[in-house]
Image (tube, rainbow, N blue to C red; front, top):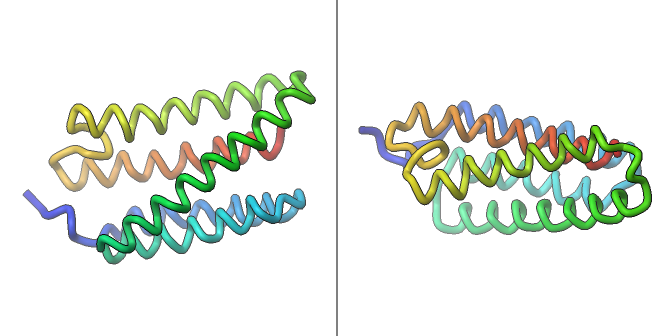
Length: 141
Protein backbone atom coordinates (compact mmCIF):
# COMPACT_ATOMS: atom_id res chain seq x y z
CA UNK A 1 0.00 0.00 0.00
CA UNK A 2 1.30 3.44 -0.88
CA UNK A 3 1.74 6.23 1.64
CA UNK A 4 -0.72 9.12 1.76
CA UNK A 5 2.27 11.43 2.09
CA UNK A 6 3.26 10.96 -1.54
CA UNK A 7 2.55 13.86 -3.89
CA UNK A 8 -0.42 13.45 -6.18
CA UNK A 9 0.32 14.75 -9.67
CA UNK A 10 -3.19 13.96 -10.93
CA UNK A 11 -4.76 15.90 -8.06
CA UNK A 12 -2.46 18.83 -8.89
CA UNK A 13 -3.81 18.78 -12.44
CA UNK A 14 -7.43 18.59 -11.28
CA UNK A 15 -6.83 21.45 -8.82
CA UNK A 16 -6.03 23.59 -11.86
CA UNK A 17 -9.77 23.48 -12.65
CA UNK A 18 -10.14 26.18 -10.01
CA UNK A 19 -8.40 28.62 -12.36
CA UNK A 20 -11.61 28.59 -14.42
CA UNK A 21 -13.46 29.70 -11.28
CA UNK A 22 -10.93 32.50 -10.74
CA UNK A 23 -11.52 33.78 -14.29
CA UNK A 24 -15.33 33.45 -14.28
CA UNK A 25 -15.68 35.05 -10.84
CA UNK A 26 -13.45 37.91 -11.93
CA UNK A 27 -15.38 38.33 -15.20
CA UNK A 28 -18.67 38.62 -13.29
CA UNK A 29 -17.08 41.09 -10.83
CA UNK A 30 -17.01 38.76 -7.82
CA UNK A 31 -13.53 39.90 -6.89
CA UNK A 32 -13.41 38.40 -3.40
CA UNK A 33 -14.73 35.07 -4.72
CA UNK A 34 -12.06 35.21 -7.45
CA UNK A 35 -9.32 35.92 -4.92
CA UNK A 36 -10.49 33.07 -2.68
CA UNK A 37 -10.41 30.70 -5.65
CA UNK A 38 -6.92 31.92 -6.54
CA UNK A 39 -5.87 31.13 -2.97
CA UNK A 40 -7.58 27.74 -3.19
CA UNK A 41 -5.79 26.95 -6.44
CA UNK A 42 -2.40 27.75 -4.94
CA UNK A 43 -3.11 25.99 -1.64
CA UNK A 44 -4.41 22.87 -3.40
CA UNK A 45 -1.34 22.73 -5.61
CA UNK A 46 0.83 23.22 -2.55
CA UNK A 47 -0.95 20.50 -0.57
CA UNK A 48 -1.09 17.92 -3.36
CA UNK A 49 2.57 18.43 -4.25
CA UNK A 50 3.92 18.59 -0.70
CA UNK A 51 1.67 17.10 1.97
CA UNK A 52 2.68 18.80 5.19
CA UNK A 53 0.82 19.89 8.29
CA UNK A 54 1.03 23.54 7.21
CA UNK A 55 -0.04 22.94 3.60
CA UNK A 56 -3.02 20.91 4.86
CA UNK A 57 -4.27 23.69 7.13
CA UNK A 58 -3.73 26.44 4.57
CA UNK A 59 -5.73 24.37 2.07
CA UNK A 60 -8.46 23.79 4.68
CA UNK A 61 -8.65 27.54 5.31
CA UNK A 62 -9.25 28.28 1.62
CA UNK A 63 -11.69 25.40 1.24
CA UNK A 64 -13.71 26.70 4.18
CA UNK A 65 -13.53 30.28 2.89
CA UNK A 66 -14.73 29.33 -0.60
CA UNK A 67 -17.55 27.16 0.78
CA UNK A 68 -18.77 29.85 3.19
CA UNK A 69 -18.55 32.67 0.66
CA UNK A 70 -20.12 30.49 -2.03
CA UNK A 71 -22.97 29.69 0.36
CA UNK A 72 -23.43 33.39 1.03
CA UNK A 73 -23.54 34.23 -2.70
CA UNK A 74 -25.92 31.30 -3.31
CA UNK A 75 -28.27 32.52 -0.56
CA UNK A 76 -28.25 36.12 -1.82
CA UNK A 77 -28.87 35.11 -5.43
CA UNK A 78 -31.45 32.43 -4.62
CA UNK A 79 -33.53 34.77 -2.47
CA UNK A 80 -33.60 37.36 -5.27
CA UNK A 81 -33.94 35.13 -8.32
CA UNK A 82 -35.61 31.79 -7.76
CA UNK A 83 -36.18 31.50 -11.53
CA UNK A 84 -32.73 30.01 -12.11
CA UNK A 85 -33.78 26.67 -10.64
CA UNK A 86 -31.45 24.63 -12.87
CA UNK A 87 -28.32 26.39 -11.60
CA UNK A 88 -29.59 26.09 -8.03
CA UNK A 89 -30.18 22.35 -8.44
CA UNK A 90 -26.69 21.88 -9.91
CA UNK A 91 -25.16 23.82 -7.00
CA UNK A 92 -27.05 21.76 -4.41
CA UNK A 93 -26.31 18.39 -6.06
CA UNK A 94 -22.61 19.14 -6.46
CA UNK A 95 -22.40 20.36 -2.85
CA UNK A 96 -24.06 17.17 -1.61
CA UNK A 97 -21.71 15.17 -3.82
CA UNK A 98 -18.66 16.77 -2.21
CA UNK A 99 -20.10 16.16 1.26
CA UNK A 100 -20.61 12.49 0.43
CA UNK A 101 -17.16 12.07 -1.10
CA UNK A 102 -15.39 13.82 1.77
CA UNK A 103 -17.34 13.40 5.01
CA UNK A 104 -19.03 10.07 4.34
CA UNK A 105 -15.73 8.87 2.87
CA UNK A 106 -13.86 9.91 6.02
CA UNK A 107 -16.35 8.04 8.23
CA UNK A 108 -16.31 4.85 6.13
CA UNK A 109 -12.74 4.90 4.80
CA UNK A 110 -13.83 5.11 1.18
CA UNK A 111 -13.89 7.58 -1.72
CA UNK A 112 -11.39 10.36 -0.92
CA UNK A 113 -10.19 8.36 2.10
CA UNK A 114 -9.85 4.99 0.38
CA UNK A 115 -6.89 2.81 1.33
CA UNK A 116 -5.75 2.45 -2.28
CA UNK A 117 -3.92 5.63 -3.30
CA UNK A 118 -5.10 5.43 -6.94
CA UNK A 119 -8.73 5.17 -5.85
CA UNK A 120 -8.24 7.98 -3.34
CA UNK A 121 -6.76 10.25 -6.04
CA UNK A 122 -9.54 9.35 -8.50
CA UNK A 123 -12.26 10.41 -6.06
CA UNK A 124 -10.34 13.51 -5.05
CA UNK A 125 -10.19 14.56 -8.71
CA UNK A 126 -13.98 14.07 -8.90
CA UNK A 127 -14.25 16.21 -5.76
CA UNK A 128 -12.32 19.01 -7.48
CA UNK A 129 -14.56 18.73 -10.55
CA UNK A 130 -17.79 18.80 -8.51
CA UNK A 131 -16.57 21.79 -6.51
CA UNK A 132 -15.61 23.74 -9.59
CA UNK A 133 -18.89 23.03 -11.42
CA UNK A 134 -20.96 23.81 -8.33
CA UNK A 135 -19.35 27.19 -7.81
CA UNK A 136 -19.66 28.00 -11.51
CA UNK A 137 -23.39 27.36 -11.23
CA UNK A 138 -23.63 29.71 -8.25
CA UNK A 139 -22.00 32.51 -10.25
CA UNK A 140 -24.21 31.88 -13.27
CA UNK A 141 -27.53 31.75 -11.37
